[in-house]
Image 1: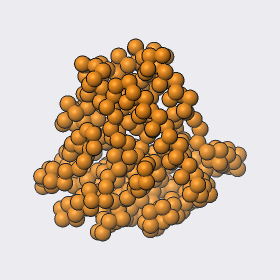
Image 2: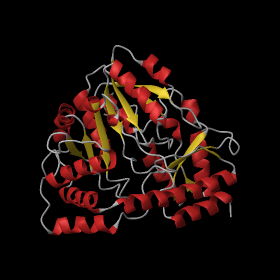
Image 3: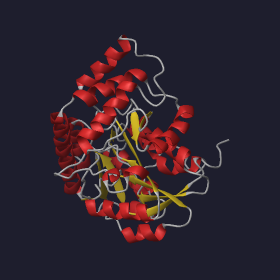
Image 4: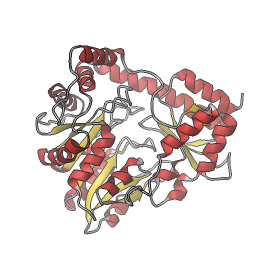
Length: 383
């Protein structure tokens, strides 16, 4: 009974690996959600909003408090200026924002350039819009971007570039030179740009996230998406936002109003509160805490025989298991759950064309309590 557009996608790999982890009592390092709560300020603000009556529909484009807070945050962190009333829209997480943007901006038959491996909602969202993704492969271990491949992939049907940076699942933060090359291509070929920047505050080792919208000639063609889930450790809240020129936000809104109409009102109010009140110390401490978790898990994986790719951002590690297992990534993920009691994601599902790149890799999430990572380390070591 599933439509032809969605039949190829089935159940997400995240749900499948989480199910297997539950069946075998495995420590779940597969799905990217923290096993701890966000800052107490955001939880208290949500409770206060509920008790104070913020429980009815919000403005479809977003609660006035939140769109103002998002606009202020973008000026503060990235020097980007947007009109909160016309150039910012609130969505039910960045995932809904991606789908709404594609539904609102693309026509059937359009092509969208994307760097693979890709987050698994992208192909499904494109299919719902009647569009198709054209992959540009990033290769282990440095995942460098080849601008010539991007240029050669453009056809008369190319309408959009979809860029995820910091990049899930590779942990790559695109360098200034790579972004400048993409900006040049987009300007010359008059492409729209959809930027998934949900990990914007999770960059490490002194690296900075640079929004593509900040490059010359890019603001007017770029719709930028982010959310509260990753930064504030509330992935279940599903409060996201889009920022861009008014016509692009209006296109997203044309779809959003009929998908969810509005996101949870008290949670919007709570996110607005922390965007306005948490200072730079919060973001510095967040990066420091995740750096420590990254370094701990990367060290353990290296110790037991993985070849771990550098992680510049996000909260994921990609690791080559070739020295540990002769099979593919799916068989290895099952083997790891059954024999070591640790769950990881087999990333070949994130590749559209070069699936062989992912068949030797596993993705581990380090957005967990240190005690959780330490318990996983004991199992991985077989102790």
